[in-house]
Amino acid sequence: MIGLSVRWSLEGLPDSVAEELAAYVETTSHARFTGMSGLRQKVWRMRRGEWFEGTYVFATLADREAFQAEFEATMADAPGSRIVGAPPVLVEPWELVAVAEGWDALTPTARGER
Image (tube, rainbow, N blue to C red):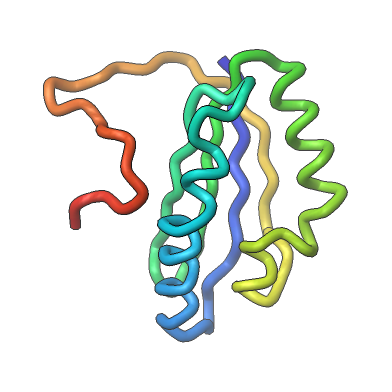
């Protein structure tokens, strides 16, 4: 499987930016990626005051390449970039070696338990 990470810096930004990103994921982005063709999984990760990241796993290399090319062409105007006020600091393709699912498997949700 083929992955892609897209990361924005949150350094020096107020915590309200992290809240705005989380609200955007909950109200808009989660629905956009749920059921997306060619996408196996997307996870949104954040370390408040440090970074916000979209982590994608695609079905094929062609799926990732197509998504990455489209994203890179428009990343300065991506919702994450508008909210943060800057484009991503990292767009990194990678290979997924393995996945193990624990007893308490993930449930698709827009905001996980804290």
